[in-house]
Amino acid sequence: MEPGSVFLVLCALIIAGVAGGWLAVHLNLPAILGELAAGALLALTFSSGIPFWQEHQDILEVLGQVGLCALLFSVGLEIRMRDIVSVGPASARVAFLGVITPFLLGYGVSMLFGQTPLVALFVGASLTATSVGITAEVLSELEIIGSTGSKIILNAAVLDDVIGLFILTVISSIAFGEKISVSNIAMLTGMVVAFFLVVLIAVRPVISRLMSFIEHTYGDNGTAMTSFAYLMFISFGAAAIGLDVIVGAFIAGLSLSESRVRHHISASFMPFISVFASLFFVLIGTRMDLSLLNPLVAENQPVLALSIALLAVAVAGKLMSGLAIVRDRENRLFVGVGMIPRGEVGLICGNIGLMCGVLPGEIFSSLLLVVMFTSFIGPLFLRFIVPRRLSYYPRIPTDSKGEQE
Image (cartoon, rainbow, N blue to C red):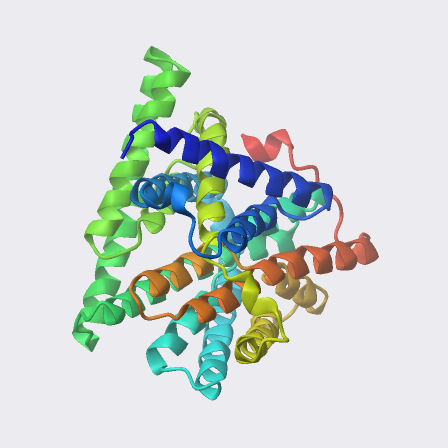
């Protein structure tokens, strides 16, 4: 293997991501859709395999995972603890209903289509999490991200990501043959709670002071390097107790969300995220088999039928989460629609099922189609609903100094 060839491979994949993202943005769609589509088109073009990067697959996967951790870290930086507290009860209800409903519906539909219970568990888990990034981008564009409904959506999306990742951890353990019992689940729950408390209560003030000291004595470069090292360490800590590394990444960002230098940290991460998180989504797209979309092929018809059924329950399950807004009928539809887009956690769950040999390739392609279509439907519905209710959803500037400080 020629070491320098990995740079050519990175160049090719990043250019594909740029092209796909550029087209999506100019169609008024989230860039992630274009990146996934670019990867899928590459896979379709090289239907017998993509020979010029297979030998670099391991290093590409690592770079993609690091980029994804940076993305979740950045999301955590934007969530304030006081915002979580202010809409906590409503967000918790929305998150719980938004997890359990699509999970059960996805499991049931998969079983009706003749899948094994383990495959059905992976499918249900893949439908639980909402894409924080996509929803936040749309709410920002509509200039209502400071409204109460928007805060409920974003906080609920974060919570159901955490719950979805917990479900993923349990299901992954089953898939890899580890013994699961009530005591094991209770121990895992205790470790998760302890991990959250240690990072958010004990570590948080220490790392905030350290980052301020580094920024004052070293400058922005030192802040960027120290925050990246902190991200890697907390991600390792999450993995050490059985969680996915992106849980640690999000908690690391949340622990710095009220730091005086969080804006410097966020700015320093953006170029890195733009490149390597996009790389992750392009690589995920390459695992999608677009040839399965051809309804004229008899073998594809069951896959397409499953995709349509899963898309229906994915949308319905999140719309039902809006019912958790008990005393605010006007916000129910808004919150439910805002929870529709699926994102990183769903892709990761399906990818783990594929890599451990539990999830068949055609089922993964169905899940990826669901992720792509919900990422399209959610923003489209939001753009339709919000302008009709501008008197109810007052526009609030996203760059308000009061919100940033």
